[in-house]
Image (cartoon, rainbow over all chains, first blue to last red; front, side, top):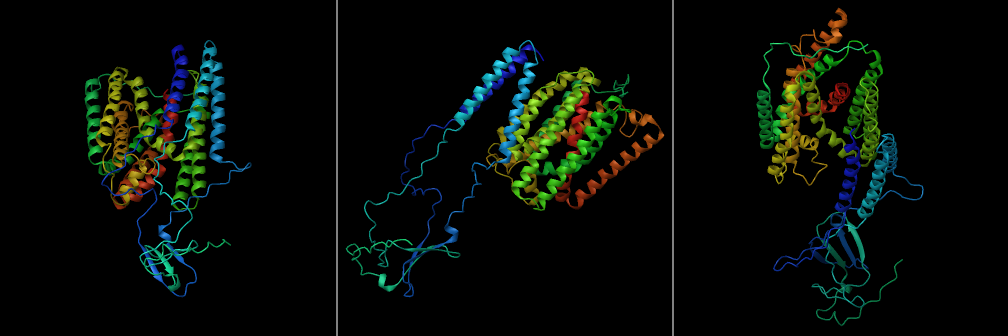
Length: 208
Length: 337
């Protein structure tokens, strides 16, 4: 191998590592102008569904039935990463990289005349790689999800078109079938039109 | 004691000049690029049907020409080469077969695939090491750091590593052709290098033209072809672009093995065994080699028949066992270096 190649390869390695470091930096935040005259943009994962109110005297508590297909898919459970847990590909890759650096260092040192320069370049390369790992941990730019502002103060009883007073405690059921959300109430939970705002809110019950 | 065949062309033989070589090569490259970009799936189907079998047979025939009659000190190298080629091919085929039958869980399959790729890298590194100790000796100790770095990549991103093999394998033929030209037609090498330098231009033109191409749609066969080209692993890249690129490179690979190497590397017609060192060992060896090549021709014919009966299944089976010729190229390339 020629002298120039011996010096050039570590420099190339160094430059490559630095490029990776910048490539993984967090992108600058962009200011987003709210669209005018367009349909409201829903947050990620949100859907438009119908809400129906059903009166059923057999129910004792308000029930909110949500079809299972409206729920987001369950996130895969991450494997346990306790003190004794280990991830085989990461372990093998780490061992292989260690062997790569070790054998590469030995090879460079055996080259003879340019070993000092080569070892220095390898050391610099290691620092550059460390810098790349540091930058790679910077958080990625994530588009801000618009949040619905929660009303200030305690939850109030609201008047629905069917004059239903929503209590703070609703039994939420996930049902297998259906395309929309259904609220099941009994007749006692129905109020007179226009009176809900003044109606006293029932006290929230303690969760079991 | 090892021996090898002389590759010097006979004087007076009618061979095309380098200019003709360049024109023919660029013509094939241009035609392949246009067809691969215009109708990638159909072009892929036709090229695999036409050339998959014959190019394997011609590869085997070329390797016979390069195999010494007596291995002597190369015995360890060739034993490791053949053992690794057959064992790794069987292991890869077995793993893919188990994967198709859903016998293994996804994590087990991925770990098994990474382990096999590790074995593959170590096998190649060991062959390089053995080759470096043969005459003329070379300092190829850099192979170990490179091999371990590749093993790390194979474990971190196993599917992408496999995809890299799919795309890099066609380029291996260019390296072998270059070594063959150096040995047989050194005056053609500059022209060949000029053709190679044009290759990125053709690839760039393909990518520029197809960067926003709509994805390929179709039945099971189209799905398999796009998956083979990496559409499932690179969701942000147009499947049309991926299949075109892969088909283009495959066509060049076939062109090297079906046209260029027989023209340059074989001293005689493929069916004449006078230039095969093993055939000189005796009548029994000659009969054995003749039977081997005849059986190979039967396999080519059977492959064509199977393609006509059930193209999709045959293509899947072919690409499963095609690992054999991919691996076989490695030791013979190393011997040519």
